[in-house]
Image (cartoon, rainbow, N blue to C red; front, side, top):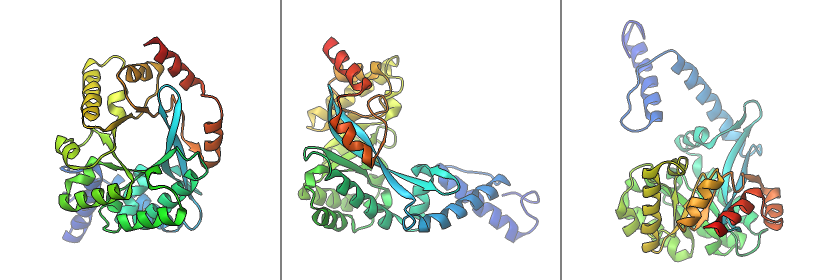
Length: 309
């Protein structure tokens, strides 16, 4: 914040600097921002969302959608539960907007528990071979109560532990390494599957794969988007698949949007595919119909491509 354009006294400048600091934090580590008037509007909008989020759960504004996970050539092996917020005035607000607010306000334990319980209950309506994957926020994972919460939920719901897969991102593993290992090992002992999400987009370290008990590695859509033409991307994805398989880890490709991407991934022995080409996120009531009906257009095309290779 600079004077006099951002304030004429110390108090005004400190307030402006504090708002700029908040904006920089939302951009990620190592970022700096200079105050401007539009930040005031953004801060006001955030405060309004924060107040609304505190009552969103009790007003049934939060809900889950489920995106299919497909094992080539056409087997539905489960769904990923995706949290949504339908605000009565604004409409659907993406998780990337409201999850950081929930974490900052200490709401993620309550919301995270609700997501886990709802996803597990929904999975009970599917064939017993299908799994449900749930994303964990950093605040949930580092709360210290995660393993107790998960154990309690699977006991109350009555679902087999191996039908639940918990997804964490690499950023979660940057802090409290010993505690992280203990948490992951406890979840592993319970029989719960553990997935490393968005692999390769943050601070990828091979030590994660060596030291932590992952069952699945999810390749971020960043590497999938230009897979048909990006030779470097192909080399990276192929190497990740081979590395994971060598360690006994399954591989899921996220963001599969075209038949060409699906064909290439099938040829390279990717274990599981996920993306709108194969199945868009569905409401809970639509998942059973998706499971029962014959493979949709995208999956049928994938079957044909698999025979071709």
